[in-house]
Length: 432
Ligand code: DLL
Image (cartoon, rainbow, N blue to C red; front, side, top):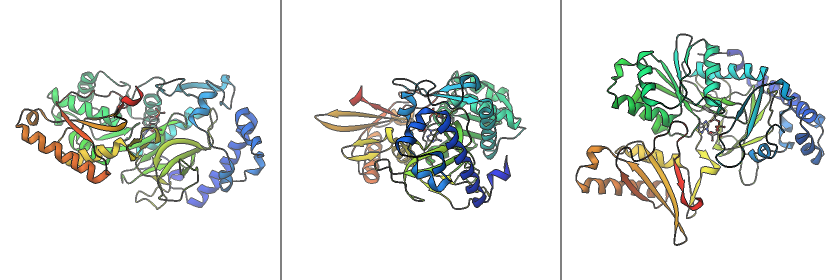
């Protein structure tokens, strides 16, 4: 089902022309209204007329999170504050948050994008959608909220947390669509069980999950546990928030809204632009934003692009599920590993609970990785030999698949903290 077929299924040649036109407008806009970009372009000897279309994109400088931080709070806004109607900010655990601003038109466009995302995920006017992404400075709650209202669904703006109440209202209000992070969905599923709410008391059909990396195996687990179809949605506040890319019912990659964003993949070390299918860092340029346009923004997210036509009929390029962020990639004795890769292995073995955490430390100058994973009550109180066998099996699988020797610790249920938003998968004691 489409929300806006003429854009979602636009012929790729026309799309390229549209992107070129919008890119040229965006470059003019930032050159004249954002001194920071003007300076960068001048340093490179560039004037707006040098950018004739998408083929000139590579001439432009990259933007990073650091640039946003250094221009804190409003330095990269392209319009006066009087035109800004909404401000969000990234959670930023250290230092200054990154601040983003939207004009009235940006909010309209963002709602439109989110309506597309939700529609491709199964939401309709008849849906009752429980928005359990956090409301506030985080873009998840309000982003989904506005999109869902645009679709005409009945919106329950419950935000994150208060999990028992979420479960109760899900049953009583007849929620059909759950929108939250995948790790929170897992926590909710567990709570539903603990409260002895039977699956047939719920009307749930779809899950709209994103804001953190999650494996294909976790999707299976959530779909089985909640008896839903779960789709992956992607976005980041610096670019707009959720709505940048989302899966369709084919679940074979996330369509990037190319009438709003131009996507590139680069090698994060050399910044060389990579070809279709090659894995690297996603770089996004906004081409239809007023408040805070960003040029070649380095997302730090690792993925690859696929331009082949999707069975759903949408023509927009698909990106593969995000493997992880360059900053979350662990380097353990020379081996690079993303938490999501360990998640896949654990879930495929299947004898553990889907709650895990990675503890990195340095002992005698050597990095070591401990994988903590919960097992069921029964297994925990069963013979020690069974636990030892499972421990060995997981250690062997991780060694075999990733070439990484780790120490596995099987822990009791509820040892690992549950997430209400983005899960904290890694505790790096080397930097504490
Ligand atoms: O997480 C926006 C969002 C809200 C997306 C709700 C989807 C749903 P930020 O807090 O700025 O914005 O964090 C952005 O989260 O660069 C990725 O590293 C990660 N991320 C977001 N969606 C996904 C996803 C929101 N589907 C950062 N898969 C991004 C993997 C994701 N990682």
